[in-house]
Length: 460
RNA sequence: GGCGGCAUAGCCAAGUGGUAAGGCGGCGGUCUGCAAAACCGCUAUUCACCCGUUCGAAUCGGGUUGCCGCCUCCA
Image 1: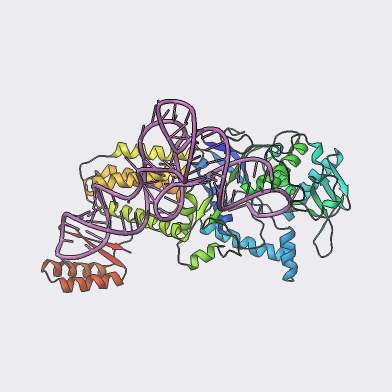
Image 2: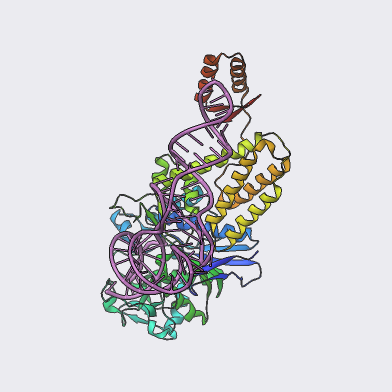
């Protein structure tokens, strides 16, 4: 099955054609581990997971590399503030990061290299760029001369915009030849960790680590590179400049960027009080699968407006689907066969998914299945129709991972007896007693639904 | 200031020239001893606003307003 995706480089939706027949090599920009991930970060990682699972579903093998940036200005600064080693700080937050990833059921990348462990590859790239005159040394640092790379700006379409002079000032800018040049290697400073290399003592610039890791683990050319939209410029632009001048050719076929998340219509910020981590949402009592579904339920190219109300809606959606599945299990068999419609809707779910991850439409088709089944009435459906529905949801859930599709466990005997006692009381029209027992069962976490000649016990 | 994106019901969100998907919530009804669940009906005669193109516009063009992002280390 072919998958189409929007390529930032060409500004078009393109069919993904892997370099190696069935294998997709993907590099995903990972976290800088200096603090807890916020829900904006996590939306991106859920999107990457969705993309990966979609590719897997389409029949590809995926080899994914995700960097862990464990050395950078913020890490060093914070470690110094706390008077701890920067490595310790990075390790702490890396652990929290992977905890969050697991909680949101995000697939682990095949490889998660650390910047501090990839210095030799960075040195190899920087050395070559120095040798070929694309990079230059200045005041202990090494810079990339963007004037040497004719295609600089092709990803972010720099030719279409005008940089605002002095919009922001790089602390090192006075040392550079051109204001657009960026640092490959930062010369050693006081109270900063450093590495010794042929071209000087210091630490890596930000962009070089991704060029190094993708080169080392995915080779000179790979299929997909993902990141948040904010990384298009300068990070990915600079990465292209480094990698392409090092390798001598194009290195990434599809650049994929996900949009940001807003909270209550505004950019998330601590000062606005709309800043959330996963832990914050858990403490508010929201289940993690509701968070995952909410992140999944908007297209990755649009800004997702996160609201508590919306999260509650996602939670309800999950509850409704789960209950639908349980009713499906406990329904009787009938004669209405809707297998064909189910097959059709299931196919559309994936058609939309494979078309630039158009999951919003996929979810609409999923709900169509529920509506169709409910309208036909579950007791009227043939056994095979119902198993088709269940199979469809199992397939959807391989991507979504938010529903509980298992038949809920057997009701304990004491609960069963109580329920039967109530039913008998009800048959005797002793409603007071019946309601009493029902309240008791509710308190125990079970819901009774009366049917014509029977009743259903559901676990809440 | 430059570049780009967005504006659709109470909330979230599809729709990209042919007469407004889907979800959540709400309201009324059927069913029920009462519930629950389900079903039926209602919940945008209209897509921020103003012009224009067209037989026909939420969709295309121009303008206005508002929001968001990027403009050198933020997913």
